Amino acid sequence: MKAQRIFFAVMAATIFCANVTSAQGTAQQEPVAPVPPTQDEIQALAEAATPGPVHAQLMKLAGEYTVTMKFFTQPGAEPLESTGTATLKPILGGRFLEEENSGESFDQPYSGQRIYGYNKGSKQYEAIWIYTGSTAFLVLNGTSDDEGKTVRYSGAFLGPDGKPQDIHVTVKQTDDNHFVVRMMGSGPADSAPVVETTYTRKSEAPRKK
Image 1 (cartoon, rainbow, N blue to C red):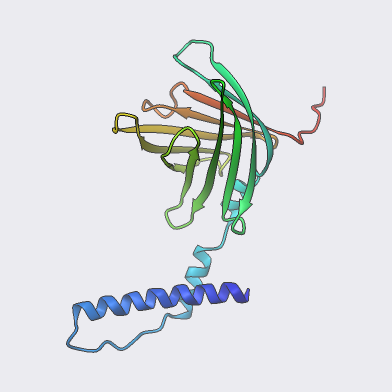
Image 2 (tube, rainbow, N blue to C red):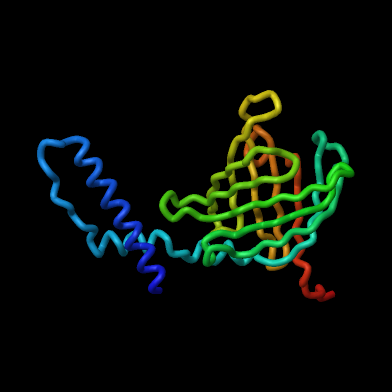
């Protein structure tokens, strides 16, 4: 708690210094008396940085998984399949969920990293994806209408031709041991997937017959 109080004090001081600098830039003739941050302002910073129920729901995905990925080359065609593994874990005190994955796709090994979070300020889910098949970041923003069990993301990246390409991603938790990531192209958000990845928790209990 002491370290947290120091952090928020530093944040408040940073905001205070920025306000003073701005005021000095607009009215250099008159010295501006410093106004220290109020306790309410410091408390607001602390609240904005504290994980809440949405983060707790997101952290339920933490664990070790086997992964099955289906790649649809065209609508109606049989998908190409590959397998891999993934480990998801909370980081930075449960503020973010980090995924590290690896496997083989098109007979080539791959590895990647994804970070998921929820921005309490914008009230949006956010994610960043990177992997060995690209040197670009995929930045996603999303919303949910079922308390985080299904999150629909949208984003864009620069394609090989240098032009931006829209992408939609849906992350759906089907039960405690499974979730599915569906990746669609620039069509409607609920169009046929280009890539569908199913995560199965390694510690899944045997199903009852």
